[in-house]
Image (tube, rainbow, N blue to C red):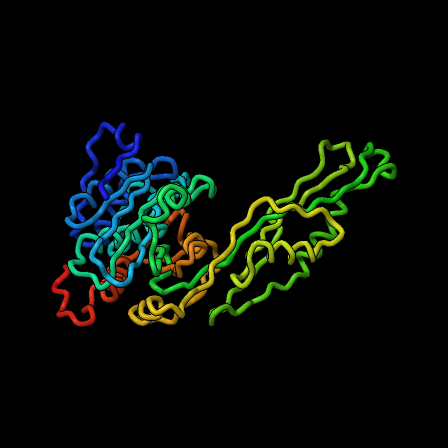
Length: 386
């Protein structure tokens, strides 16, 4: 499959920034971070990634907007997909923030926007593409845009719509930060508006009306009393949560409000789909208007799949559940078992001092190299892949 430059990439007049994929993987991560790629501004980084991948013999490279797909075609019995997003959240504005662009080193700690989320993981993908001479599985590398914004803009979603066959695989790994531990599947997420109704009146004659904001106290009490469940799914314990995240009501300081809405976010275990989540939430508020405004199902961990089990063994750590929603859910919808695995602490993502250690990036690369670069059955050693 030949590269198919998008109109956006064709219009780029500048020569792509050259990336050294054979440098230390942590230095490669720093070089990626130096290319600012806030959501909507991924073109320069996508150009650099595409150019670097086109220089590697044997890879089939395809460009879709600011997403890049590269595939090996070695005829292996199994194909694994390694995915990572190119974009970051906006740069911090606080004085003295270190999670910005360009990247900076403090000893062996790399600071800057995207250090954990997730240019360390993208660097690992690129290093593997350049250094694995004879992998024991065929590999599809995906680098996509618009992950940090609304789902309708997702570059991965666009790839799935435009060319789903290019993303076919037996197992997928999303290189989101997990502190180097396999995190299986992910929780689903849904948002609802729970409305209360009242009667408007002048606040000087409040007895003539019914205060809808006061009526929301019943909604808030349900949430305050709610005890979130922990649900075991395929051997992993997923903790759920249900919280008010926004409340609105009232039109003026001298008017009794006749309507109020509480926005609720439900994070639900992957034992249920979005319809099961709806039933659960509506069952908690039988006397109120409940409208779902957004939702995405989770993903079961799929750790029973042979490829997943062998990968967990190669990492050598006890797997954990992923409580947040990630794009593994998109692969799960396609019937592809998927896990999260990448360098860095997810709690540092989007923070003003976002950072990752050199060792964390190197260890992540080593784990994947062990798993993908070992001997194939009936074959001799794969050779030095460095």
